[in-house]
Image (tube, rainbow, N blue to C red; front, side):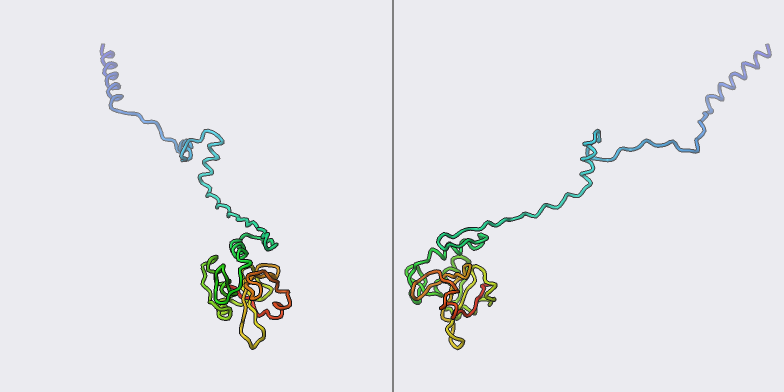
Length: 208
């Protein structure tokens, strides 16, 4: 009887101790490996295509390719000259429309014009540039250039001797040809290789 009482008391004590005492598992010295976190992207990576998109987001956008402008040339039927670019097309087209205009001293209209009047009129209408009215003073408006460096639109000046002033001016076209208002033929195209213009050629100038 006494033995049964002792066993019952021990059982109650064990039950009470198990209620107030919590057994925690022993900690491992080696931490458990953590699961790999997915990369932070604007969208989930579920395919190789998604991975390519994610890499593209990290790459800087390539600079835009420079725009290549190809200038086309043109052919002037009235002059019989082909130009490599259309840069001076307006100049050439307008100047050639004056061919046949009679010479008239001190004027610059289609009814008649002198050499400096023709040049100043063309430059004002094509470029919006006001040049001096006389060929002599017009030379002061330009930058002098070598004959071998002449381009379409440059001015050519003439004088009869080193002691005389400039008396004539024209607009250079191409292939030694220039357009001008001649006292004998009005507005016309001539060549710098002609004896008169070859002997009296003074200088070439470029309007800056």
